[in-house]
Amino acid sequence: MKRQNQSSVVEFILLGFSNFPELQGQLFGVFLVIYLATLIGNAIIIVIISLDQNLHVPMYLFLLNLSVVDLSFSTVIMPEMLVVLSTEKATISFVGCFAQMYFILLFGGAECFLLGAMAYDRFAAICHPLNYQMIMNKGVFMKLVIFSWALGFMLGTLQMSWVSSFPFCGLNEINHISCETPAVLELACADTFLFEICAFTGTFLIILIPFLLILLSYIRILFAILKIPSTTGGQKAFSTCASHLTSVTLFYGTANMTYLQPKSGYSPETKKLMSLSYSLLTPLLNPLIYSLQNSEMKRALMKLW
Image 1: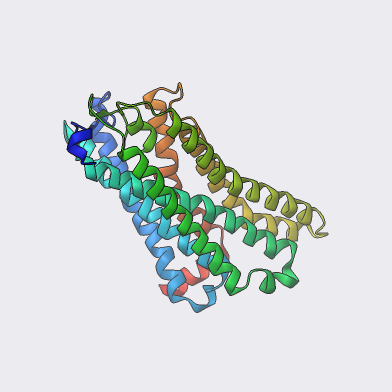
Image 2: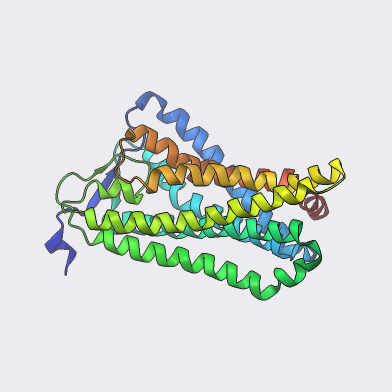
């Protein structure tokens, strides 16, 4: 079916923070600095881990993949958002909007499973240190990474294809900072109930399974730490996981509220702030959290300099 037969909308208008015109300039400056810091921080992690052979172990290779996801996730959203903040009427083409939606779903889905895989890796390292090399061998590591990326590709392809098949014949103003599924879905001129049920079920599984894996991993880690006789040893073991917990809480908490309730009663401004949490803050904080609290990363950084 040709798109011109099912839809009269050829472009969308991203409203962003147009309700606060007096803050557009300040927001542009703040978001530009955050975006540049995100690019530099994640790029440094990618370069350090790629060049230092001592860091070619699952823990840091998972971190490398997470930095690639975060850098890409931020790049999909931030440049377009900066354009929205710098112009009075920012438009994005129909194809461009759904391309952005696809990559948001791809990198968001991949990050969900990567965070779960990283929790399992820490569980194996702390709870089974003697068998760690056997549990997290190269084959297991590769399967977890490939599975994370494959699920991201599948999520992006299926959900974007379905949403783009809806007719868009009314308003073309997206009251959001990007073309995320819940925001675009509100403009569809069709009954989206079946999609919402399927999307809810899929998103529930995609978020719930990694979250349960993380929860079980950290419960086991907590019990293992309590058995460590040395207080210093326990603190050191838990410090390796504290940064991961911070990132997980920020990412899953806000993503849950956005995607598990696509047509919820949250105000548009609240939804924008929640979106900024996992698309802006998480990619910025991950390099700081993992680098500043990790002695091996700091040693590798000093070696690089």
